[in-house]
Image 1 (cartoon, rainbow, N blue to C red):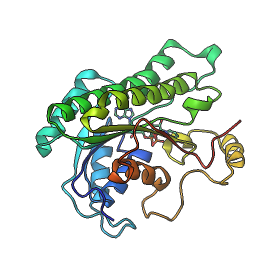
Image 2 (image 1 turned 180 degrees about the horizontal axis):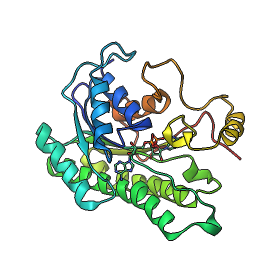
Image 3 (image 1 turned 90 degrees about the vertical axis):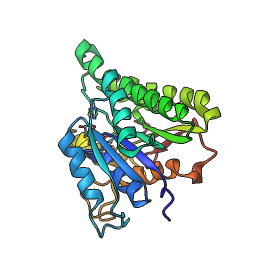
Image 4 (image 1 turned 180 degrees about the vertical axis):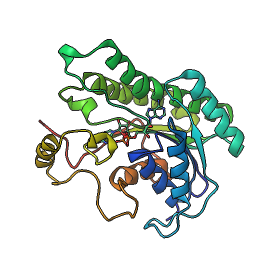
Length: 267
Ligand code: NAD
């Protein structure tokens, strides 16, 4: 049951939505969690939640820690890995990049700034964390599992999201290539492609649009099984798959991109 008892898991974007859910889920599997977010207070709040007794997954009170970092900055990503290693005296064996943003605009009106910001956080940030984690693991001779949160939008596109779709398609390619390069070091790299998940990110979408999207999902609901976990906006649908990819149950899976969508939208 506690498949990740000896794991140290670094989760970026851990202060909200999917990153927070992943942190809760991995801690529930016994992992020690290094929760990182641009919003340091939000990361600390996640760590506080990890110690909360009585949730369905029953996370043990662990030696979790919060970190503040902007993953889109190379120096900050490097410092993050150094800080985590200094704090726990080892590199993280599980690394989950959840930090991500949207800045939507139709292609014909999208500014250079809209493009650059989303690519900087979603694609470059994921690259920087994957690289720094890979370097830390290889130099200490440790194996590991790197999981990058892409999106189904990276495969099917979405109105108003050329920047986001490009960033998420990029994450799939970078993760597949990292898997090829790092496999011989015992490091697996996989991406997870969520569909529409009820988080602060999708709460920004107008209700009318969300109703239409929900109507197109064969499973009939967004990824957010209400009542399954006592924490609000906890996304066990995605977190379950991340926990599987983090664990040795997926020991021969690398370079995969796993869709968690309730079925891929065809628009
Ligand atoms: P969210 O907005 O709830 O959480 C994202 C977190 O990332 C926030 O806490 C934010 O502070 C943090 N963050 C933003 N920029 C950062 C930076 N530069 N450095 C460090 N942290 C930063 O969003 P979410 O819905 O939980 O999304 C998490 C990931 O899942 C994102 O990569 C998103 O693109 C992806 N995703 C979400 C959905 C969805 O439907 N919600 C679907 C597919 C993919």
